[in-house]
Amino acid sequence: MVLAVFDEYLPDDVVVRIRITASMAATLANLQPDLYGREGPGYTTTRGANIAQAKTVLASDGTWDVVIDWERFLNESPESQAEVDDQTQILEHLAAHEPQHILMHLTSTDSSDYVDSLTGSPTVRAWRHYVGEAIDEFRCELAANRRVTMTPTHESTASDDIEHFRRALNESAAHIDDNPRRAAMQALGAAKEMVKALGYLAAEYAAGGREPLPPSPLPTGWDEYIGQFWPDIFELFASVPAANESASVEFLTTVLQATCKRVITWLTEIGIRYEKDENLNDYCWWDRREF
Image (cartoon, rainbow, N blue to C red; front, side, top):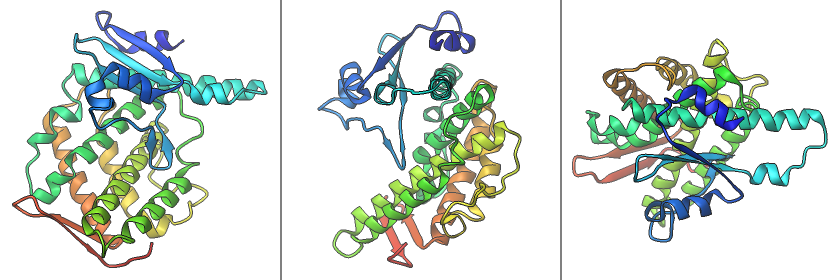
């Protein structure tokens, strides 16, 4: 089933190896040791409150490896047909999501193709990789959701995302005095994962033709930490096409810049003001120490 789904999206001359593994980190370290092995930054499946379940990487010969984490399926033996159907749905969704990364690479519309051309202040540019990654994920998820939605839905797990974000901000704020740079970087990392989570949620809404109303039931902390940021960032995400649809780099860059600016404003609204000066020095001011 996985290969059949890939074949629907990719040109015939694209070579893809599907690697189903009980350890994504170990498999990726073996495939690309410079990036994911001991000599590199390594790989973790933790994504805020979520866990990465697949990763697509380009091999040196121009072929592709898609690593799918089978640990969840190995550790959760289905006891009913409904659970079997859920696992099949998850696998089909992953199989629809991952080839979108390859399509963006083939069309030179992956964020890595345009983030460094972004203009603006050093503060705006500091967000380009984080926000570019979120735009990539939105585009891939939009295409995948049009085929089959993920289970559980991102709407149903929004409370977990916000609670993880809140805890991460409190952990970072604990180091404001003794290690302010660590505090700032932890806060930015938490914001990055929250923005990505909202990108996944936006793709779910956009695929279903829904208006950007708050999730129902309203997640705990939504009004305090998300609020007006949601319709604003939804509009930005929803303005870009799915990964399997045509898009110009110029337009994607425009959306990237607008989204970076809105993310900066959002953080200020919840009490964290981050700036990078012309010499690329980082500064962070906190209006609160508890979240």
